[in-house]
Length: 398
Ligand SMILES: [Zn+2]
Ligand SMILES: [Zn+2]
Image: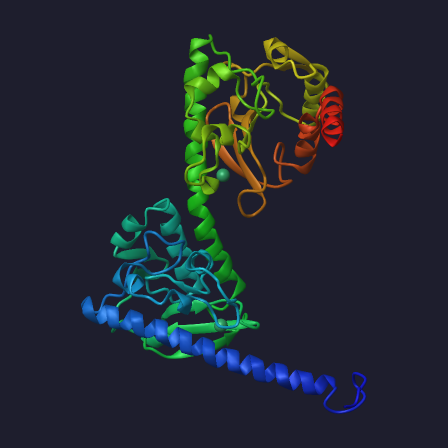
């Protein structure tokens, strides 16, 4: 045996390992291509049974994957590129993040793809309605449902793989498979990938916007009983939540962004981890949130007393308690979504007039880093609480 320093002598050389790596890469590509071909055969066979029409999108799976019989009889492992998988990966994990994308319509260009995503987002996640469209009105005519025998079938992608060593495999409707390097040809482009992300997140955003609109309506109705006054802040639970009286009248599930709702979450759990922030006062600028937080912290947790105030001292005049009849309601935020839930970073804001906007992080108040930083101290335990923790911890140690 001989110990050879790296780069001293063959085979301990960069060239040697590069060659090995190229060999591995070539092997992975062959295996991936086999996967894509096997998936293609499943789809083609199913379409033969269905008079040439390819399967629709799956109703149960994450977008974008085929459903129906083709999915029911599928070896789920085929949805994972051989270079990506690891031993013991569950079907759920693979389905959560499949490596091949299926659109179900004949999408030939970036323009087609944008039209597809517009239509997809417009049905707000109702995949059944989306597949029932039968054709989508695109920029240059219509996008038809995928079926065998469409014109230009050698340029209609059926399955698209992203991120396989700087490119990916594409299966076309005529059955041929190409490995396309990144940015050399549609659909292997960042723009195509962005459009697909937009479609995925667009459905979540539409649902979130609906939820906030409904919350806004509930709050407006609630305020009528109180002569226009909006709820105060909760005395228990997390900071920046409606008071208990208002919570009793609301659907607690509405405090969770629909994109993040998990099966079987209890109301108690949601109340400790709500996705929307409620301040209870008309805070319209960074200087005002700073002043608000000063008053908030001065209340030392007595949210009843804090909420009983009609105004807080602000940098330029008073900060008004949220009421239905405040001037310029279109510019007064009522609920602010946590900035980490959607893409790109940012979130929805419900305004007092009932409209909802998606604001990209740091584009505009209150969707700014400084705003969220200002709220931080509200989650810090009081000195008394810290002392009590220290005391109980200390006692438990002995
Ligand atoms: Zn691959
Ligand atoms: Zn949301």
